[in-house]
Structure formats: C-alpha cells, structure tokens
Length: 446
Image 1 (cartoon, rainbow, N blue to C red):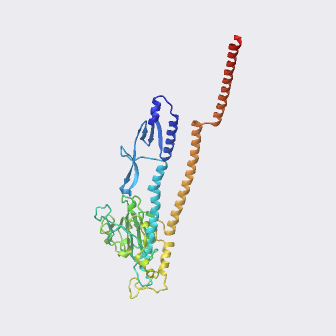
Image 2: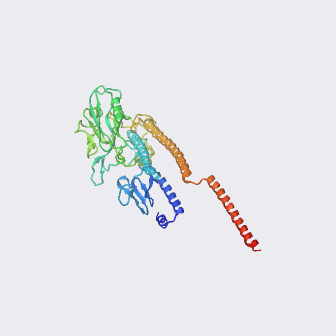
Image 3: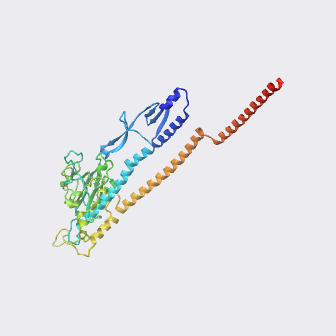
C-alpha cells in the first residue's frame, strides 16, 4: 500500500502493484469476511466487521490470546483495543466454529457413550462372581473428579472442596414398572444449564413407576431415570447444556413426597432439608444408597482415560461371568453359581444391546449410537450440499467479475486487427510521402 501511495503521489499508475493488491485482497476475503472502501479517491480501506484493518498506509495488528477457562484455546483480538475480532464468515471463522462447537459436541457424545457403558458394565460386573470366586470388582477403571470417598471436588482450584460430583445413584428397593405408586408429591430437579433452572414433576397415587420415570425423562431436566438390572430406580446425570466441565454432574434432587425416599430408597429425607445439591459438600450422606450404588462424576473427557481395571488385566479368572446365589438368608448374592454359569455376562450383553437403561435421553445404547451416527451423516450431507451451492454461486460471481473487469479475447483480437490495419495504412502513407518527396527533390532538380 505504501508503494502504491508513493507511485500515485508522483503521478504514476502502478498497475502491477494494483494487481498484487487485488490478489492479496482476494486471498484475504477467502479467510475472513471483509469489506473494501475509500474515504476519498486516494485512501484505500479494508474492514473486518466494523474495525479497520488497513487504511491507506496504516494497518491494525491482530494478536492471538489464549483463554485459560477454555483449556488455553487461542482467539483473535485487536492489538490496540483488546477487542475480539468479530467474524461472520470465511475459512477462518469456519475453522473456529468447528473447533469450538462441532468437535466438542462429537467428543461429548463419545464421552457420554463411554461413561454410560463403563457405569453399566461395572454395576452389573460388581454383582457377579469370577471363576476364582472374587466379586465386587469393577471391569473398567475411569478417573473421577473426586479426590475422596465422599465425591467431593475443588471446582475453582483454591485447594478447598466446594461441590459434590455424583454421576449416578441407584435406590435400595426393587420396583415393579407397572405397579401404581399409591403416593403423591412433587419432584424438583435443577437443569445443568449454568442457571440451575428448577424443573418440577408432580406425581399422584394412581401413577405407575413407569409413568413417573417417563415423566422425568420427558422433562429433560439434566437427569434421566430407569430401572437397572436389579429393578432399582436409577438416576443419572446428562451432558451440561452450558459448561462441558459440568458434564455428568447431578445438580439437585428433591422430593416433597416419598417417591425418592420411602418407595425407591434414594434420598434419606423429604423436602428442602432432605434434598441433594451439588453445590454443597458432604451431600453423599443425603443418599440411602451404599457406595456400591453410587458413581462419581468422571474427570474431563473420560473417553480418553478409560481402561480395563488392573485386577481384570492381571487375571482373567476375575471376570464376573457368573451371577451368583444368596445362601443363608443373605439379602444379596454371597456365593458363586458355579463355573458353568454365564448369566452375568449375558446380563451385561443385554444391557449393552437393548435394555432401557437410558443414555442421555435415548432409551438404550443402540438408540443413542444410531441417533449420533444419523446426525453426523445428516450434518455431513448438508455441509456437502451447502459447499456445492456456494461453489456454484462463487463461479457465477467470478464470471460476472471477469465480464466487468477481465479481458475479452474477442475484443482484444478485434482491437489488434484494427490497430494492425491502422499501422499498415500509416506505413503506406509514410512510404507514399517518401516517394513524393523523392520525386519532387530528385526529379525536379534535373
């Protein structure tokens, strides 16, 4: 730009510099949405949004700044003002949207599939027996947010635990899905939306367990409900609507009646006093369930940290394929059911195929996986169609631009013929004048 200004100042027309500038502008327009204008005939200006990038011989610099709250992701800011560079389109904006929205969404779906699979397999596996007689073992190991046995976590990094991070809790009582509950009350959940929006779900004595479960799932309150392999009511957290670091955290559980208390055996008390809230510590004591029936929230991006447990890796005889049996009036299985029993392995397989255990708001793993793949395929098809449409429009615009500012070969050929004929005519005229002068000078002298 400075070279162009210098050339124009002395009256030159630097066409080669104009061409180089236009090519640079065209490349920049592919990266980010820009507008080009002039404050006067001598001052060329380039804008990104409402901010001036180039004005005559001056330029505004852009810098990259990392965001500590977003794992150090870099964003574009104007160096002088410190404001974020606002873009609406262009290749750069497309890459940022893929980085900030598309990829995190797909990772979250894989994380949810992983977390639910690990919890489902582990909860069934713990109830079974291996060929060596061992029981109460996890098949998978996964890192959790909590650093103690109470599920507590330091969310702001000040060294003090300030929340209770629970992913799943199961009740103590086995329930029948179609049996009327015979009680009335109101459940209160909080959405995982950054604002703790309350969701109220009423139930009456004529409702069945299945109807209340369906009502909970339809509310999309950040909680899904189902009956597990022992027919116990199970509540699990879903992905956060606002903050990925709050994924798989149960926000709030409260019951004005006895559905979560006396009937299912999840909460120890009713009302506000008996409610569970993640923003307090020691909240695990609000549950009737034992630690085996509670799963802590996994650490961030759990799909990258899951592994087969050391106990299983070291000894395949510990794989709990047998369901076991209860001896001596024990309330739970306390003895293996023989080496030929594989009912626990079949139970795991059934849970991973089609048992309605709820993965996010889908009824089972197959539904969740099918929905995720279908959505990915639809998005891919729409992106291809949009790209083809845009390419057609760009071709039309480019042809229009070339018709206005480009060179027409037909016109140039016609002009060249015209100039050639004019040159030939001029040459003949000059030859004729030379011959006339020769005649006048040489022959008349004689």
